Image (cartoon, rainbow, N blue to C red; front, side, top):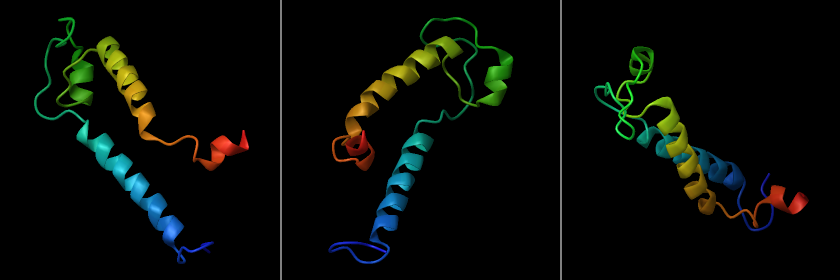
Length: 90
């Protein structure tokens, strides 16, 4: 049941759209193609098990973790935390 000026189901539609956007964004970051045998950043060899598990992988585990952390910091600015219900409850 929606409240205020919104129609029934509007809140769920917004939630579904947000989830779909996040899924599309995550899928766009997945590597494609043939895996590299050496890391593009540090030139360390990429283990065969990693290359088989993630087709198209270009970075070793260490460099990928650093790239993920940097991306996570960049994504922090995408969300309005002040307008979030959770942030108001704390």
